Image 1 (cartoon, helix red, strand yellow):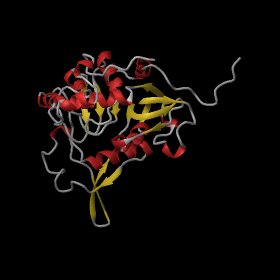
Image 2: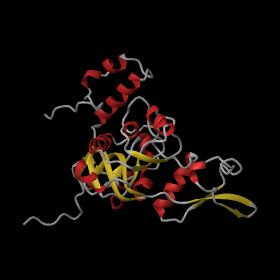
Image 3: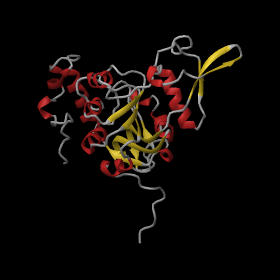
Image 4: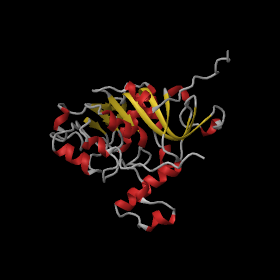
Length: 279
């Protein structure tokens, strides 16, 4: 018999990882205004048809039918907890049509601190941002009650309760088979906190390596906070996906794709790029 592996092997198919998510649950998704979205996991979510989800995310993502925004169009999101609802047409229409509940919006720093509080097991955080504005009568009628405040040392603070989720899905560059995740670029922001704030955490990555291949100082989220590792797009395919979308939105010239040897004809109908064939 082969000796037992010294570390749990957490790599699994996306569908198996998403079996932990059921209707009515709270779902955290890592991203920053569309950058660093877990593309393959979102496509699997769309295919699953799981509904009545409370989505906890910084923003609804990018406009133009891109990844996370499609979860609003499909009717799978029942409630949104974030900083903004208007970054996509899909989320805006769902909100204005009362298809998605938004109890209140949070300043970006407040939202991040609420997630961090959930990650660290804190009972909440005291935040002065918005005092005198966000507590005005009628500001957030769907909230049902005024925001809680506390006076301390001559100042007023909002009592912001922690944010946690049943399932968190983060997006990294690399992960080893135990779940240690390395980030790059924009994804460096608060994905570790999102992972720690989830009862069950999935890490979607561009590349999966063996334990020991990621230098300890490069680990942005330790594997003890990750329950499943799933293979996402390759980094090349991820870049192609985003470039094609920016061209679609008119933010990049069309010749960017041809210069890089890419073509919109190379995209799947679901919007994800064709992966290169294995050698």
